[in-house]
Image 1 (cartoon, rainbow, N blue to C red):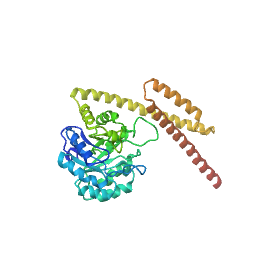
Image 2 (tube, rainbow, N blue to C red; image 1 turned 135 degrees about the vertical axis):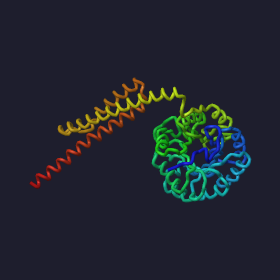
Image 3 (tube, rainbow, N blue to C red; image 1 turned 45 degrees about the horizontal axis):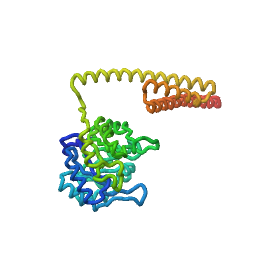
Image 4 (cartoon, rainbow, N blue to C red; image 1 turned 180 degrees about the vertical axis):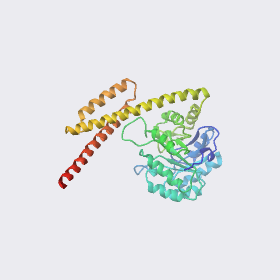
Length: 372
């Protein structure tokens, strides 16, 4: 699957590409004043605004609808910025394309539904327009990839993914925790696909936009979608996470743009460190193999003595001991906790397989005895 490089469908001289604008279009005056101010920021090349805004619960502001398309056309005429809107239904696509919107984006709540994505894919068939695909609200990489594949299947190559974080039951300091490993996996599995970060939704707070943006660029994401409003305090949606045009300017000026490769000396030293990691990884794999071999032996021993596989007291003792030791050694407690749970789950699986193998052998013996 091939994708058109981002700089071939959005011209931008200064990195990163910035897509900015309010969460919701509220009035023509609000849209135009925001656009005028952010158009002076060199990195901003695309103006965004939500027109169709169905809320989680009815009764809130649900957008100005198609009336806002005329405002976006005026933004394009007067500022030279490209425009983008979210589309969730085929009729949105038809209206936006008719009014000259340059880029369409598919939101997180739409991406989660393959039926909706398929309908949009069919509506977009034969229309040469760039597409942004946000990650689904739940942390499901396959759904994200599936949405991109459905759009690509209709001939689209101008596609970029937008990482906006994921819903989780566990509380964190983020509105939508970034779970960075998921977009990293996406970049690994779909090489060439441009990935843009939406720090506004991830943080849910204007003060967090700078740090999240920097982290995204350090992971080689190519652009940022930042919600920007001339008066965030009185915005009709997502007041806390929107920044002012002045704040957006400061954010872009403070971003550090790192190079993917350094000098010869840097690359040589980096390669030495990578070799060290490769050696340690090999050792870890050998130790993990040995650990599971011992778990297999334990399964045989427990089975011979008719002992249960899962022993809660022993697991709690082991978990607490390893967690305390690891954190004292400087390991991140969440990483260590997740790793210990995975190791324990795999050990239980190995021992369960031993039990099943013995049960199957016993059944074969019993059948043979019956035949005899």
